[in-house]
Image (cartoon, rainbow, N blue to C red; front, side, top):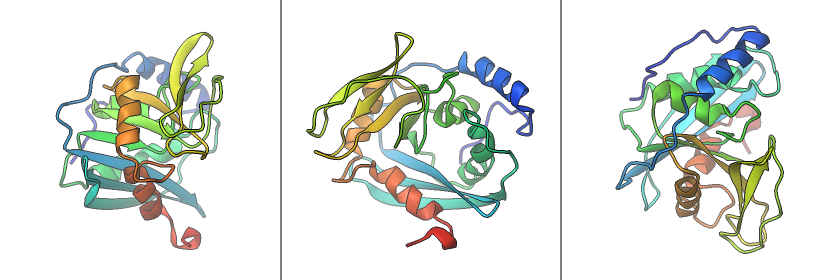
Length: 223
């Protein structure tokens, strides 16, 4: 079970939400993850017809064997505002995390961490609230600029914004589009990159978030 040590209202006006993001970004910590790692969880959310469905899939590390999965649903309570997606997605995620019987060593989010205009994407936001190690592994770029990494698995280029390295563009499968990795909380970028690669099983996405994506899919969206 994972429960927040910090709390705040989720129905803030955008101006207040932005101010809160800037405040919480100051609490993001860079630190090596716990060692040895024995479990990693993937976190994803699907939004459909006014409902947010969050899924958390915990897997043994490094073998990537599923240990537990939980889901939680809630009405979407916040409008779509670019850069404030955590205010739509975090409440059901926190509810799902509270249902866990395992406490994973690290959470990998299908979303941004530090690679955010205010340095507080979903992975960082929840990581700070929980004070727990988190990583952002997004399928697309939110901000910053980068060179294209080489075609081979493991090729990597820094993602920069205003001269600051805010993440990495990582090729997780040869010849396939890269993912965007960033620190969430209590993690280093080097460790985040290594973890995402170690959680790969031949697919573009790391296994924990790949399975969390499937678990989060609502009936209308399932293949």
